[in-house]
Image (cartoon, rainbow, N blue to C red):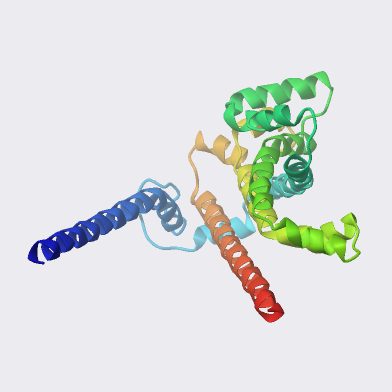
Length: 282
């Protein structure tokens, strides 16, 4: 009994030690990741034109951002490109994921393999390829070229996310809907699409994030008359970034964090609503 108790206590100590080290490692990793973001937020309140040292606390750069800065024009271009590419990516990606998940055809394996090409190849290669394509087709470089380029590398992510969501859906619910008299279109909009909403929201956030901060591909296909925010910031690096950039990026981070929290709350509410329906049914 004593030997068994000693072995059990050793196992518990090992588990406790392993748990402590895993927590320490997790804290170290997240600290390493988020320290640059914290520094950016801190220096957005710095009373100094450069970001080399801390000189004091001020809201001057937020005031300058909302009254004199021209970065808002570049942000508007970035938002237009991101939102348009998200919409196109969702339409193409959701329909493509449904087709690849539920239908069999000759080119299915080839399409499945080609989906990973925009993800695997370097962005420089994809940017040059898209630039050559637009040049051959005499397609003008600008907002529309950026939207098409961003849609190109966002669609594979949407398809992959949606295929995972579709694989976890219960097909019997759709079959029950059609057995009760609904056709395929009614079943899709009333049963299938609501069940895909969490995946659609996740794919939309992923596509928006990929589009809003892209630099390499956008630099190839942007043209001289439309400049996104990342390209503008990249050009400002050569002469030194002002704290107004930190202020704008801080606002963007806050908005994105609030969006992620809202997405999580909506998905949790949808899960609770679905479970309540099941309980009330039984």
